[in-house]
Image (cartoon, rainbow, N blue to C red; front, side, top):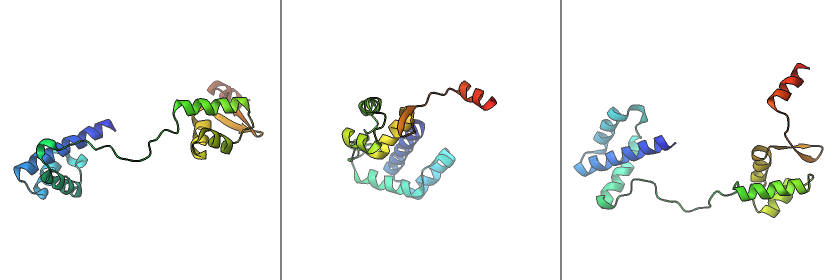
Length: 143
């Protein structure tokens, strides 16, 4: 992900340079296609960036994506994991809806934390940690 992001930033800087020289968008895309091959951004994206770079002062252009507003992803933070784990250890018959209401996150995130992160599963209406190792599973398979 980081490598592709760096590649996008390089391509944007190339677009900025060629747009400042006065090249057309078709020419810019053709030149970039020769250099980057299949990893080159689309013609539509080149036109978008040329419009952005021509409308701003080149000294103030930001090549990286700006921070976006919106809800941050924080439902699987360590504090929530610890709260969920404590609730399950205190009452093995607790339901996900109760945990979601107490912790203040969605039922889907609770399910993800309980099953994937903490490794619990339901057995007879109780949350039980998964305890079989790979060796134990192989031994049971042989029996």
